[in-house]
Length: 281
Ligand SMILES: CCCCCCCC/C=C\CC(=O)SCCNC(=O)CCNC(=O)[C@H](O)C(C)(C)COP(=O)(O)OP(=O)(O)OC[C@H]1O[C@@H](n2cnc3c(N)ncnc32)[C@H](O)[C@@H]1OP(=O)(O)O
Image (tube, rainbow, N blue to C red):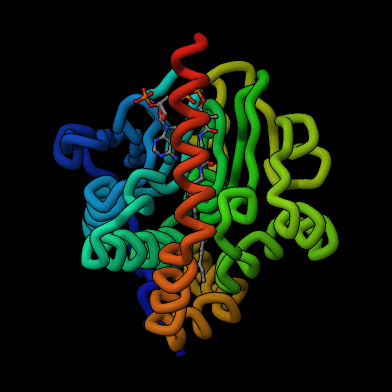
């Protein structure tokens, strides 16, 4: 059985200041109703390097310890929620750093996916790959309308999608839609994401997305925390349990795949393309 950290007995409503912290790469505030807002702030695109992944997991632990009513995840960037894993961490990597990257991503996924408190995400921009992964971990997703995209495009960057991430996606959209999208690394527009159920609602702007997310969290005001957290655990345990058993194999596969010369070549091309795009702006 996956550890019973989803079991949650009481909510404490703390004054905003008592929980607020600003790390280097994230910002955590708690409003006067006890709802925590965690903002990614690693400019320019919140790409997930080892330090950001670890800071996020630490802050989520703090939110749990301090018994916040729930969590809203968002980003400080005006147009990107998160660009996913930091590609430069995977290109010509130091193997120890690559190991830290993957184990930190595993830790973040497991912590956010099994969070005992209600979770919502205000997606205020692009959310490819690891950005989409964080959104999928939450119980409610709203995305700001605009020319943004969201999806698991891992195959497009040369990396196969792990089973636990396929499982996470299949809990949100149909297996058929997930298979078609993940095999080809397809990204969804905001409208397409709404149509397939990848997001629950659209929002007019970030403030609207945060308001809608908080409204979702407040739905649990009259629900027992134990009833909520145990029911959530039961829905998610078929993805969490095999993951817990296969972490080591998952890490070894990731390292094996990323270190393949053709994957390294593809990652190098993507980095070049991103640089050229920037230069052309
Ligand atoms: C068993 C095997 C297991 C394998 C498991 C895999 C599953 C794991 C889960 C996740 C994997 C990943 O997350 S892979 C990462 C995939 N991410 C992407 O493909 C996104 C690439 N980026 C973009 O498409 C765009 O940047 C954007 C749409 C996110 C934003 O566009 P915008 O125009 O606003 O910004 P720029 O493109 O000009 O970028 C600005 C700046 O940021 C740098 N950048 C962008 N993305 C990344 C990234 N992912 N990592 C590192 N750096 C990134 C870009 O190069 C620019 O840098 P400079 O300012 O220095 O030029």
